[in-house]
Amino acid sequence: MYDRRKQKVNDNKLILNCSSAGDKRFSALYARVRLWGETKTVEEWYQTSKVFISPEGREYQASTWREGKGKKPVKIRIGGKELPVELLSEFYYALWYIYLRQNPYLVKYLKEFEDFVDPFARPGCNSQAEAIRRFLEGKEVHPELKFLTEAGKIE
Image (cartoon, rainbow, N blue to C red; front, side, top):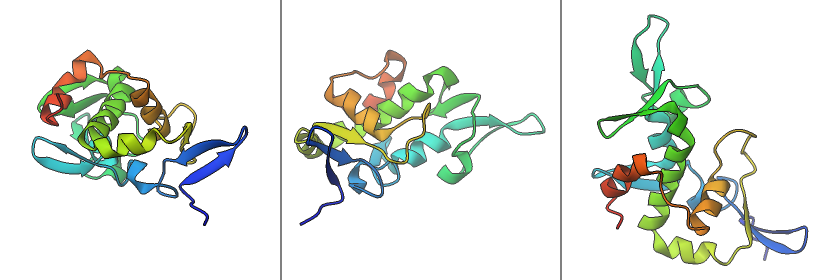
């Protein structure tokens, strides 16, 4: 039976579709991360932590993931901390790192695949497929974001 989450392409590699059109457990819109006792999707944490400047010159954060999507922030604010916008991609990776550490059975499942694809990823934007690859390669969370792993109770 055909499984839309799995694909075989090129050299007959087994590839996992990491998106809402594939295996939703690996979509930022569905993957749920618990930080400071609050559970949100990766996309919700990521987009609502972005800080923007209003036309009046005031700082604000998106109240929903849709409000923040596609906009360039000036910084990140999460857990009472402010971080430079240069850490945005590392922040996205940290959320995936925590999600996978909080769900070790999914890591076991991911190891069955040879590669990962996010068909909705745009060049220059963060991708859950790339975050998953980095996790499986053993990449640690950026030192300035370690407080997130503590908030997610990751040892």
